[in-house]
Amino acid sequence: MQDWVGIAAAAQVGGWVVYPLTLLAVLAIAIILDRAYVFVRFASQPAVGAEAEKHTLPEQHAFRRLDAAVIAPAGTPLWLLEARAQSFATRIERDMSRGFWVLETIVTAAPLLGLLGTIVGMMHSFQLFGGNGLVNPGGVTGGVAQSLVATAIGLVVALFALFAFNYFSRRLERLIDDLEAHANERLSEIRLKAESTHAMLGGTQ
Image (cartoon, rainbow, N blue to C red; front, side, top):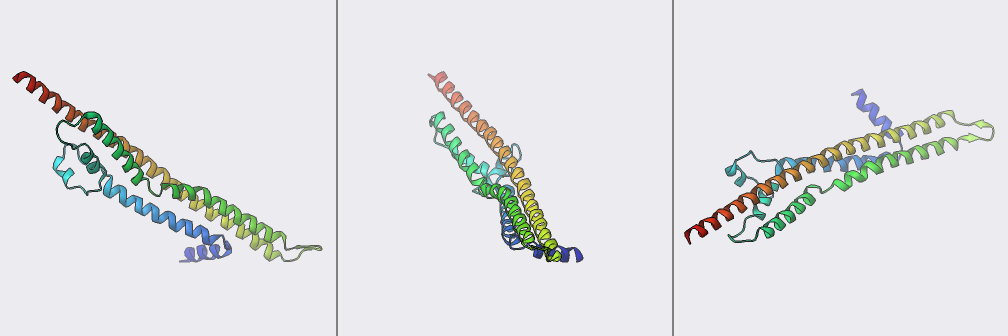
């Protein structure tokens, strides 16, 4: 309990810069929770060979969307299916990376806000120096404390957003690689089926 009281007191000392930093922290947490749910719900890779399980996936699931892209009537040119698969993969990447730019912005903005708090706190401290020397020692230490607290909070928020951004970026890269492998497997099956059908028709003639 004393730790929380200490944190609250430090935030009060940090000055007005703490409020936008708190807003950035809340925004980062909201995006992280949203992306975590999306990746768990719509980007989990189905078990190998579990064809029945793939049909039970949500409609917006990445692998189900990609499967729908390569389903076409017999005789559809293979290049068209490849183009559709590439287009769907691009859309999936765009949808899954939604909010990443906000996390990246927070990584840059939070330390800058903390630095701004440092500058404001130090300026406030320097104003307390009078012509005859130090006027208010307590005010000087309070300004220094404000600058340090603002900087610390900014760095914590930035690190939190940075770790989340790097983690989700890596998850997205792995998802795109898995989707590419899955699409190549599907297209190979379609190509093999088309060649087998063509061979059978040629053999009957």
